[in-house]
Image (tube, rainbow over all chains, first blue to last red; front, side, top):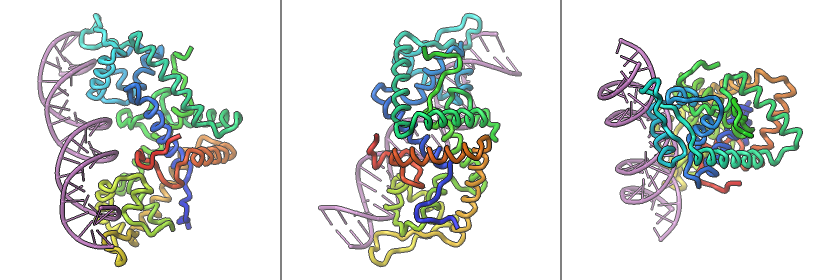
Length: 161
Length: 161
DNA sequence: TATTGTTATACTCTATAACTATA
DNA sequence: TATAGTTATAGAGTATAACAATA
């Protein structure tokens, strides 16, 4: 039992499969702007009112290692989307912030993200979309996934279920 | 509008987030057996009745490059789960098959996969699970994702929507 | 000449450790 | 002594190209 012609796959597989597809589509749509999903994640957090962020706190939120974050922020700073402002209180750490260009970029990413949602859910009825969103929120919360934070393999704060 | 304290995220993000979580959990549960999700994907296809597979056809199904497949099959062959049988009709290609150990391993992976499904959907009612599975199947099919084939970034047969 | 599997190589991302400058 | 950011380096995985055997 269990070795059919077309393998019967469960919900975990389907979610993972669709999630990968969605990530790929997001990356594709982002690519022309020179940004990656990791960059977008940083913009998303810096655009939110959760700050102020230092590199340590941002890295902790995103599950990105400090050494990796340096590279990503270098790129975003070179693109003039993010600024590292020195912190007078503790001169070891930086306060991170979006520039005007950075806020504009985030707006575009946000729009693009809405378009992706629309495209992904196109085959569903309004009721199906609503139910799906509700269920996804339940699952995300139940499994301890931080709101708005993509676990790009967070092998850091590991307290799995 | 749009820059809340807790960023408002859409269904694509949530699916991607949950998919990554599910993949990670799967990898964690698989790890003690020395297998990775990629190995499991190969076992899944070889256990199905879609064969016989050569390395080219298998790689095409999985979206894994030939050069990568060589490494994965070397590992599975060293673990005695898979056998490369030479094909008398065309001596360039191999017929791939599971060994007895390989079929046993696939049974265990399959069980483990069921447990993961149960754990993932634990917070949902029976009706919610049923609805979710239906919607996921609709989406997977609508977006051209092959049944039982995880798109581990298939940048090959790219015909995106 | 084309195809199957293989090897070699470059690039990206993850992860760890060492270093600096501050505290 | 510990912490924030940085740099250096090793290890997977992805991707491309070149190669040997076979068709």
